[in-house]
Amino acid sequence: MTKVTLETAGSVWKVLINVGDFVDIGTTMFILEVMKMEVSYEATKKGEVVAIHIEEGDIVEEDQIAVEIREDES
Amino acid sequence: MSWEKEIQEIEKRKQLALLQGGESAIEKQHLKGRLTVRERITELVDPGSFEEIGLAAGSASRDESGELTNFEPANFLVGFGRVNGRRIVVGGEDFTMKGGSPSAAGLRKSIYAEDLALQFKVPLIRLHEGAGGSVGGSGEKPASLPDPVYAPPRFQSVAKAMATVPVATAALGSVAGLPAGRLVAAHFSVMSKATAQILTAGPAVVARAMGEQKSKEELGGWKVHTKNGTVDNGANDEIACLEEIRKFLSYMPNNIYELAPRLTCEDPVDRKDQILTSIVPRDRRKSFDMRLVINSIVDRASFFEIGTDYGRSQITGLARLNGQPVGIWANNCKFLAGSMTANGANKARRFMELCDLFRLPIVALVDEPGFMIGSQAEKEATIRYGTAAVLTAAMTTVPWASVMIRRSFGVAQAAHYGPGGFVLAWPSAESGPLPVEGGVAVAFQRDIAAAPDPEARRRELETQFAAKQSPFPRSEAFNVHDLINPAETRSELCRWVDRIVPLLPGLLGSAQFHIRP
Image (cartoon, rainbow over all chains, first blue to last red; front, top):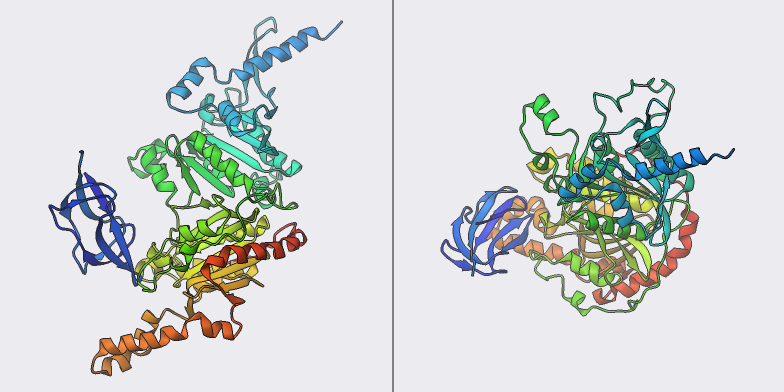
């Protein structure tokens, strides 16, 4: 299981994935707004989204777990 | 009568000293995946260049007839060597004896490393693995008299070395107490991710004093110390750490009385990377990769980043422009919009001091939105550390070139421009007291609130003010030296290097350090 943690605090602008989606390396999963700039988070592993812990509009903290991905072994 | 017997004893002592802590201690070290200090030095220096000092220091045991039965060498190695042909002083604890906790002679030799580097005015490299003092004292012999009250402060030579010669250190195993202090007393420090932990005090002491149960790795592994700025860089293993030190030194002079070596450059000075003409998005909310900008401008593959994981909104590192070593300082808009955080400011201040001390010209690639704001930033005393960075820049003596890539706002932007600096602006440059998005919302609060469509009014005002922050009116007022095509940044900076290099010899000698907030 890969846990995607947030590198900085900010607010969640867009969530572009749903639980059950399959993501590829490089798929944009969500976008934070930090200091008026968009910071997008791309998947670094290929696999299934099994949990999303953020919602659009959330104020989030550094190191918070945002998404959990079950890695695709194939 | 000859001295043959004594000569034989000298030889025997040498052979015993080279055995370090003995075969089983060396094997134990290797089983833990770590090199011995002798192997480390061999890997670091040019082949065959190590000239050891003080192999004869240690303690000898004799039998009843007075014959030498054993010789235990001091557990700190020191000597001269060469790195890329240039002489250096290297030292390191020998972990195969007493876990690197200094023996009496070991402590003397370790202190001598700084003295040697200062006397010969050559870079100092320390390879650390060891614990600090032990309550049991050093060695089995009764403790000797402590130092007299009038002895100079122990750390004075450490401080003087840092003010005179480049000091580079590596943490290669567990480093605790005194060696940990010495590790960070450096211009560049690197730790091995595979084998090193850095601990002010180890797990047993922490458990006793604090009741906290933590492993060495949890207390002081690379995940902790590359992020908090204790060390500058993390490298995968010991060999990679030594390679980083060799690389760092390649940009450094031997001492403050000499200039860093300029290399022949094979990368054309007029190379134009067209990618730069569109790398900054027109949409101000979109970020770009500043490291791409840096690598495109400097001599090919010459950028050596320092402190990547600490104060990440700022990027600092060494590079070459037409062969001349320079310091590069840039904002990373992908992290907290590139704003000046407390950590980022500390990192930048230290980097400017490094460049100023060793007369490395500074190139600033500016995309500074201002000091980081919010409750966390206030808790971290951002304004104090940020202002320290601003005042440091104002007091530097080395030449600066500042390229306004995008934003240049607030008090924080002042840290990116040195006295008498050469200032260039890209067409994407915007500058002012604060970015329009925040500034308009505050200054025109009532105006916006009273408008029939406040959102539309806000956008209208923002567009109006954004136009005023464009670089064209600034260039008309000679507020910048020139507006440039981004693709020509490299050639502009290489020409600048040729202009400022003749000024550097006049700057040699002690740096002027002043108290900073």
